[in-house]
Amino acid sequence: MNQSSVNLRIIILLFIVCNGFSQKNTDEEITYIYVEGDSIPKTAIELNEILILNRVKFTSKEDIKNYYLIKRRTLKVYNYAKLASERLDSLESRFSRITSKRERKRYAKLVQKYIDNEFSEELKKLSRSEGRILIKLIHRQTGSTAFDLIKNLRSGWNAFWFNNTAKLFDLSLKSEYDPYTNKSDFYIEDILQRAFQNEQLERQSSKLVLDYYDIRSKWENN
Image 1 (tube, one colour):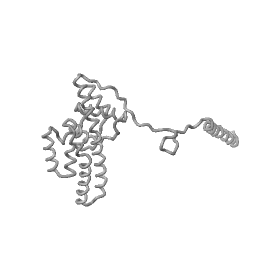
Image 2 (tube, rainbow, N blue to C red; image 1 turned 45 degrees about the vertical axis):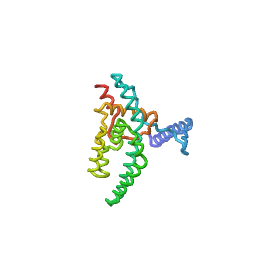
Image 3 (cartoon, one colour; image 1 turned 135 degrees about the vertical axis):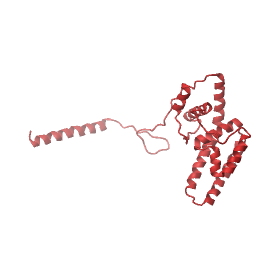
Image 4 (cartoon, helix red, strand yellow; image 1 turned 60 degrees about the vertical axis):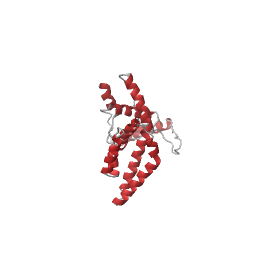
């Protein structure tokens, strides 16, 4: 086979391939999706991850009653914990740009004063049970216990004082959120995931490493 014949075959092959792609693009109709509030058309929409949430298996009527009590309290206090996480992120971001210890202390007091003025009266209305769940959720959303947050933002003595005061009301600022070993915390996690899914609550990622399916599997196997 001479060189000209080989070149001719290559040219024909390239023509067929290119023509095939051209024909495909011509024949296929591209569908564009217009999203409200976005002027740029899209060919696909990225969907949020969805968890498959089966019903929780209860072992007694007392368990069912407990679950719905926790649900009511969790839905009530979650936004306070979410706010605490947002304020902490804002504080840490600002702190990274402040070198003066005096200025840091002053800014921390401003943030605390803002939160106190805006939410202190609402927080005073919380019941003891709601306060316990809020302390747990603060740990879930910030990655730090309420005790450690106070200790870092103010002083160790103040944290100790607040914790002892909380104990008078059967609360501990050192309480941690652990749905792997605490059944009530597992209920809280399940309630949150369902509330995020149906948009009853605005989702905010936990600062803790949590795998809902691992947590659920652990309790179902037990």
